[in-house]
Image (cartoon, rainbow, N blue to C red; front, side, top):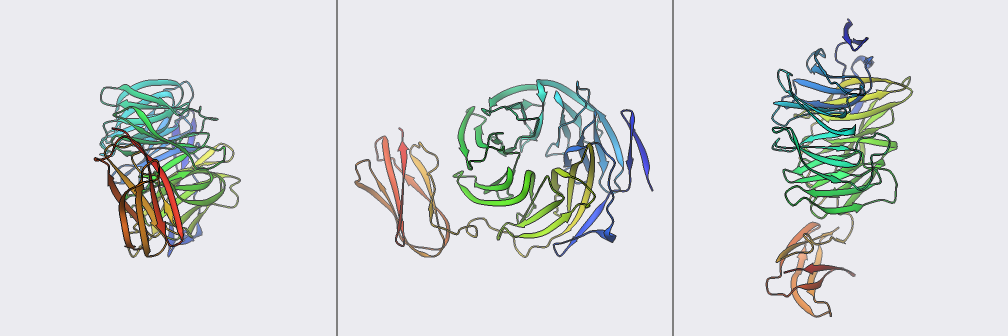
Length: 434
């Protein structure tokens, strides 16, 4: 049975919330029925922390709030803007507030009553990728190549930094909080940045591919050991301590807009401009499940996907060709036998990572990986090649290893650390500044 809901001079026709099922990681739908929502395009979706409510940013002047149990729209939050498109929406981690963005304006709502709290004019461009810090003290968002840090309690901009490249064509930018002091961001020319809030500096800037496409989403594994960067066709898996590239995974034939880790970290879901959502095993990186969209959908652009807190459902917000959208909720039956540990299973080669931090004083961490057990030697040398210290000279098991080097007895300068494994040797430089 269909119901009508009047929004901004047109009707949105709604059926009961579509729930599909993936049994045994096979892409099966309940009764093989697809229920399409005749909605405006959806740019972003989010759950309330208790998964009872859903918020969606739509191509209209409203943020739509849904009851996740029955699929009813419970609230339509009016968003005054020069252009009637809501580009981002996000629930605070404690569920007390909802932040939404449009053309230049950031609005804050009560997360339970959905009463209006405050509005802040940020820029004269679109606001994308609204993200709450883990402690909910700040909001980070992107607008035209600039990351803004917002104090939602005082309704003010506390900091901003340039990504070094403008937003290309009104597309969202990858943005995530690693912790309460660190922001991970992507640029539209393919760079990955790490920004320290307290020091107000970019501490890392890297490009992992020669591709000229942007980084459109960043998702962090539950154990915080890996960050997945969504770009054109590929997911890049980055070690969050060394910022080294661990794995490159081709996940699409077209733009890859978004990805999301399952709550246990065992699977990652990715989607973009194609008619399916893929589930990858984070141990083998094989495709272990798919959610197909109807063949009569000319183009499905799945802009936002979010797992429920218990990992039993997947929420998908989509833009359908030419200018419609859909919201779908999928029941996912995944029961992994164990929580995946990213410490060792990804390793397929002998590798020495850049020490961190670098420059350093007095201690730094040296990280390396070996594909199988064997004898390892790790030594420190000065600038003219004299051996300073032997850190490791023993057998080690396969996997990723870390060693802390203390330089308290050394003078400032450039040093080298060199590792030998089997018949291979790798050497890197590091800088001590006292």
